[in-house]
Amino acid sequence: MNELKYIIYFFIALFLGIQLFIPEKNIGEINPKGSFENEIETPDDIRKMLVNACYDCHSNNTNYPWYASVAPMSWYVSGHVEDGKAKLNFSTWSKYTKEEKQKKIDRNADLVRRRWMPMHEYLGQHPEALMTNEEVEKLAYWFANIKIGLEPKQCIDNP
Image 1: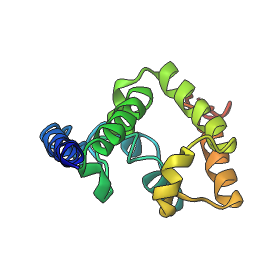
Image 2: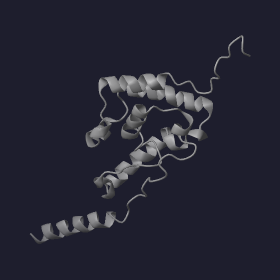
Image 3: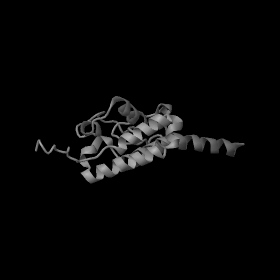
Image 4: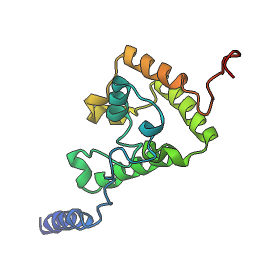
């Protein structure tokens, strides 16, 4: 019985000790200069879908759930946010080249249409990110119709 007591104390101390190693939160300016929305005209309904389903992992401003303050879950969430931002960061959109932007836009259309984004484990904890089939198609269609860097065609009569 004494050994069990020490084992329990050990795990309590270990759990309390790892709480000292909470990663830095990803909390920055909501719509900074150089962000996606400052470059791409985004309708309100699309913006709402992006904020609810994408921005927590793909921007410099994450809305954290309560469990993201408790290790080891904080490490898991932080890792997902860092991975997401490394692949696409809507807050630093202006830093991408035209080619990178178009590639990311096209990839988003595909990922959304296939329902690979947002990730299923994210949806389980964020019901606001759930989208209907119509919303998925609308967002995917919207992404698919963005063409980066194409100049508007000029009328022959109006050079």
